[in-house]
Length: 97
Length: 388
Ligand SMILES: Cc1cc2nc3c(=O)[nH]c(=O)nc-3n(C[C@H](O)[C@H](O)[C@H](O)COP(=O)(O)OP(=O)(O)OC[C@H]3O[C@@H](n4cnc5c(N)ncnc54)[C@H](O)[C@@H]3O)c2cc1C
Ligand code: FES
Image 1: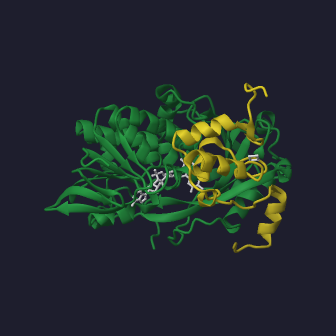
Image 2: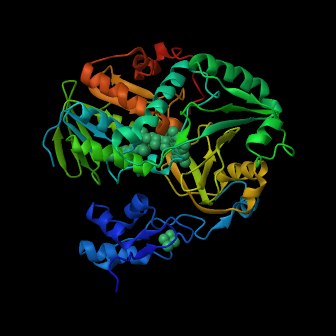
């Protein structure tokens, strides 16, 4: 294997494994912090592609059990929704939920 | 944890971090305490537009403060040696017939107060520079266009805070995150220290930069301040090609981030019930969504990726509170920033540093002092909004 090749973990935001490991070393040791620091998990798939891997890396690097690493805060609408569609939903729901 | 500090800042948002950077740069022994992670309050949830409240607020001192802050922001990347995704952008305020009169007056005041030239564009001219704005099917009479002043911009709030704190730490500041301040010790009218979930630190000077929690923090020192948490929401879309304008229509604002995503929301005006529930809801977003779709119809097909809520810190006259508390010297306020705390942070940082390092009490700081809310001063700023 060519070790110069970078391993991309977050495809949407183009973030490598090295960047994530460096961030953990710098003290960003929760999924929320990594997300805010690197944008990993903020892409189109909203972290579905990368978050499990990132949480695994946090666990490996910090020695905390995998179950103790919490996922980042889920933000609506979970899956991307076109602005026009969202507008229709909220129109039918004037008071908001 | 350190046992003593010359100055303790409560709150690790843009206000607290800017102050920490400025103080430590001047060799003040500074500690910052944040109950969550840095920028976890309003700062990381904001639209992070760096703007002045162009034309919408006639208060001269506020406009001047905003201008000095936005100018400082333009130099921040170089000063801190950090990419904060600072993106300067021209500013367009779209005007409808009902607002024409109001804006003409307000913009004239803004121009005079700040000595800036703001261009007025007719619909045809809007089309030329921003063809994606649908002026034909909307009641648009014109737009105010503020360009080439390097004062309208956006920045990434997380990177900005990180840049400030990296520099502050380098200059010796100590930063404690995941540490909540639970009490402020006052003896014989003097601050003696703070209690936190991780221990006690002695100090005679505490800076309250706790944003929407500022009144709770002031209460710990026995001081009542009239700030209230006020909920606001925003959303972000998938990345798009470059749209060269920051814009507002009525109280709806939007801006494009450096990576092409559009972030939008609504300026807060009405005082809502204070509540600390940050869960996002669809209700407050319907106006921004509809307005944007109405004025830029193509955006109807663009995906919204996330939306979220956050808390602003609002005062009865919608002006910030900056400076010392008369009844308790040693307690310094840097709060009440409403929906423009990101933009104004650099000015607040400078004012507070001048106060602590040089004991300088500028006229501006006196203007924004807490004492204006005492009954006898109520007319001071000439503004008093409906307050629950
Ligand atoms: C949706 C939204 C959009 C916005 N858009 C813009 C914009 O485009 N431009 C703009 O200029 N402004 C905008 N704002 C406003 C701006 O975000 C705020 O005015 C600004 O971030 C306030 O910064 P702050 O540091 O004063 O407060 P905060 O960022 O809220 O920081 C206060 C910190 O204090 C901490 N804290 C509280 N109590 C304690 C305690 N007891 N012990 C320890 N720590 C404590 C909190 O955890 C918090 O991190 C927006 C706000 C929202 C919600
Ligand atoms: S892979 Fe990380 S956000 Fe999609």
